[in-house]
Structures are given as structure tokens and as C-alpha cells.
Image (cartoon, rainbow, N blue to C red; front, side, top):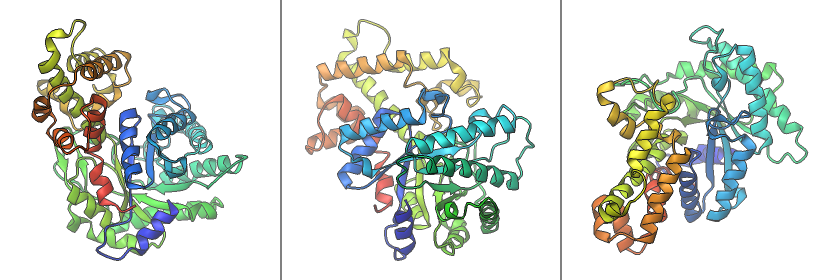
Length: 428
């Protein structure tokens, strides 16, 4: 990551920007599709886990940091990606998972979590202490946010120093203007771009805090800041990047020789806007729900193929779409705080850009329904006419000899469609 930032800062103006997509997902198909694309292009892969997904308590995936590392390395081995080409990152590492508790309790747990990430081999650490805990003021003052980030950095550095086989030290991402993970909860029309003055203030607070804590060496490994470039998405709408609004912000980072920006919530941006973000020094482009949205689109299309091709032969249970939506309604904890409009609930559950469905793919009932769908189409491959109807891009790839008519391959390729613009926006 240090070398990537160095090359980005030295790249000539107007060239394809040096950068890297950051794929934040725990879904095995998403990870496999990402790694396969990176292998094909001979470039490194950056896979990140969030503090809610993966922590010492298991998160909503049930995985600790060490579990997640083994999980991703297993997929990497299957896809032919060298472990040396895999970068693991921790996203939004801070007290978020325990914010309903007191700040001291939550921060103590966050220290344990950050240490476990580093010990498990995660080397890109996003320090995010922007959220208020149970006994905090709202919003949390920025000096306190920076002080807590310093506290977590100290825990990460200590964990790395105590490792018998330490390897490369971690690099850090800071920043307090952090978009809501997974997209906005409310309808949006426009966003305020972070001002250069605000970015400078954030940087100064963190720089001073690191120096006072004796973390001067760690400060040389702070590679990026999270700011708001004016991109976001809500349930059914995308706020597109407008480079003219971020011109002053882009100019600000040019004066920082070791720093780039990290852009969150870039999901659903067009290929042209992703490329412009990278050129404007947003060298790390985060994507999460956008990839699982593409996964869901492909599964829905395969379910339609199954219905039209084999529907009369299904002898047990509902189809995939009915099963998934039934589980979501029966267990609403992952979507109820987000979907408030009763009149469009059916549409939100199935099609919202925030893609709360991603929390349900690991549910045993949903996994069985997915396996049944894929197994049926594997046993009875559908005619290309149905793929032309429901999966036209995969139909074209099959006709060109670039893809086989196998359901797992169709699913991976449909998922990869959302990843390719990110890889094209950044040179390796």
C-alpha cells in the first residue's frame, strides 16, 4: 500500500490513476469473483472486513479476524492468487459494534478487536472512532475522535510489535467525515463536499495526537484520509460524483506528499465517474453493497431462468426469491431500522440499493434455496434463449467463448460486472 501511494503521487497528470479498489464483503462468491479478476489482470487484491462483520465476538458473520483471514486465503488458493498479492484490511475499526455501551467499555473492546486484526495479518487499518457511544455527546467532538483513533493506533502498534513473525507493519487510514456504512438511511438529494479547511483540521488533530503519543513512526504509515467527495446512495437513488465540486479538496491533498484520499460509498457510480475519482486522488475506492446487489440481480435472473425452464419440476419448497423474502420478513432485525415506508416495503426488501439482503445469504434456509437453484440448473443447463432474455451480458460472453453455460460461472460473472469498472478506473 505504501508503494501504491508513492506511485499514485508520482503519476503524470491525466494518466490513468494508480489506485486500488477495496472490496468490502464476506460473501464467498463476491470474494472469489474479485480474486479471479485480479489474477486475470496480474494485480493485487484488497479485501476488507468491517468491525460489524468480523470481530472478537464473531460479528454478524460469526467470524473472528483469524477466521476471516483463513476464509479468504482458502478462496485465494482456489482462484490461484498468491498470498503475497492479497491485502487484508479492517474497515471502520472502532467502537461502532459496541456503541450502545459506555465509551470506556466500547473503546476497550475496540482495542482488543484492532489488536486481533493486526495479529491475524490485516495490514490496512481504518481507524474510525467517529460514532458516539452511550454516554457521549452527539455529535462527538472531533478532538475526541482523533484522541480515540490514536488510542487504537497504539493498540495496533503494540500488537504488531509483540508478534514473533511480524512481517510488514500496518498502514493506517484516518478521517472523521465517514459516510454511513452501507449507504444512507434517508432519501438524499445532494451532499456537501468536505472543505479543504475541514480536511486540514482533521489532519492536524491526528498528526498532533500521534506525535504526543510517541507514534511518529506509525504516522509515516498513515496513507489515506476518508473525506466526503459528494458521493452516496440511498434506497433507490445515487448521488453522482461531480468533480468540479471537489476541485479544491483534490488540490489540498496534492500538497501532502504521502497521503491520498479513500472514497467510501462509491457503489453504483458510473465507470466514468469512478475513473475521475481516481484521477482526483481518491486512490482507494471502496465498494460493498454494490457488489452484493449485482450478486442478487444475477441470482434473481437465474431464478427466473429456473422458473421458465424447470418450474414444473420443483417438488419441494418455494423458489429462491420467495424463500429469501420470506426469511427477511420472518427475521427483520437487519432491515427494519432502514426500511420505513410501508407502501414500498416489498420493493425495498428486494431491490433497495442499500441491499440489506446481503445479511441473509448465510442463513441456512437461504443457503439451501441457493444450492437447490444452482444444482437444478447444473443438472439441466438452460437453453441460450433464456440466458439471452434474463442474462444478456452472460449470453454474449458464452457466444464469444469467454464463459461456460454453468450456473456458478454465470453467477460469478454477473457479480464481476460490478467490479470491472473499479479495476478499469485504477491502474495496478
